[in-house]
Image (cartoon, rainbow, N blue to C red; front, top):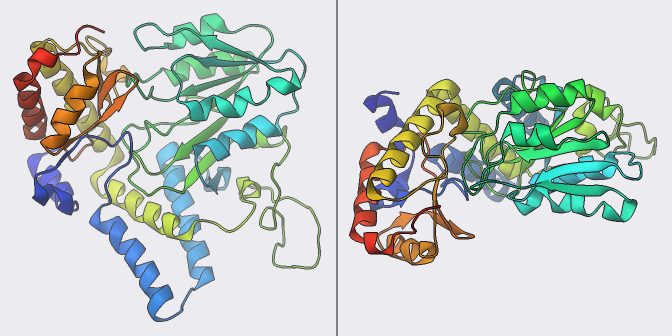
Amino acid sequence: MNVKQIESARSYFPYLKKGIIYFNHASDSPISKEVKNAIVDFINSRSDDCDFDYKSFLKRAEETKQLLGEMLNCEADRIAFNENTSTGLNILAQGIKWKPDDIILLNDVEFPANVYPFLNLKKKGVKIEYIKSKNGIVTAEDVIESIKPNTRIVSISFVQFLSGYRVDLEKIGNVCREKNIILCVDAIQGLGAIRLDVTKTKIDFLSCGTQKWMMGIQGLSFIYITRELQDKIDTSPAGWLSVDDAWNLLDFNLKFKETAARYQPGTLNTVAIYALNAALKFFKQFGYDEIEKQVISNSKYFIKKLSELGYDSPLNNLNDKYLAGIVSVVGDKAGEIFSHLYQKKILCSERSGYLRFSPHFYNTINEIDKVVAELKIISNLSPGKS
């Protein structure tokens, strides 16, 4: 991505004029002008004119699913909107007909959203097994080696929220498909920064919030589910919009929709869907492949500069295919460094002893250099080796 394109992308973010360096897209993204305009237009129509064209909204929602389908390489009817990542994962967890001693394979560095929906199943006799991470990383090989005959689901994050490690989902997917194991993916720390082909990787189920790298707003997520898996699980929960002919209001015929929309039981988050639609069109303007290249380029440069300062990232010396935007360092002084950077209007995160940076594609080398310069000033607080 050339300088002119990056400057164009930066023009959509007014906060940059205030000297803020925002390296916290792994938490929540700032709202672009395009997203803000979409939200304001909707609110104005409801406030000024009491106008809500529901048919127009439904068209926008379907268009948004089409855009997600293009991003994921799937049909739009395999996508359903929900409130958050956990809601989506609970659809899978509660929909499966479990057998005693079925194993769900997780790992010890998953974000809790990808743990508790499955941990809640222990009362049904389901076993939860955790893969032990090494240096904050769980590889595809670790996953494959941990599979047992009773393994029913492998659920894993596309990108690990602490270390920033991007797992090889295609390698896992091939083995899971061969062994008839459901592959479930929490994609929230990858989508928007990195491409993901659900067909190529043989993902059966995916859940993803839209407020992080996808640059939407909180309160909206989506799931992807294969038709084959949909046919094997219960539809839970059920609601008035889950069924065919939903507007025949007094028919009370519980005939579920054939599409993934059966997992949309009630009224959708209208504002957030308008916001996501605008965000996805913003991404398309610059190109998903170009965005990924820029995110990885930023990650490599940042890791190199941190290494030169003596900060050791879990991703040092790894191939590009394992990078995805998050760059972290580990140590007991992470909280102090975070506070110093915050005072300098450099926004990142401190999570469980990790100092986590997450610049997006429109962030620049110059911004990374400024962050590194501040880290150099406080190098006596170095978090040390991970």
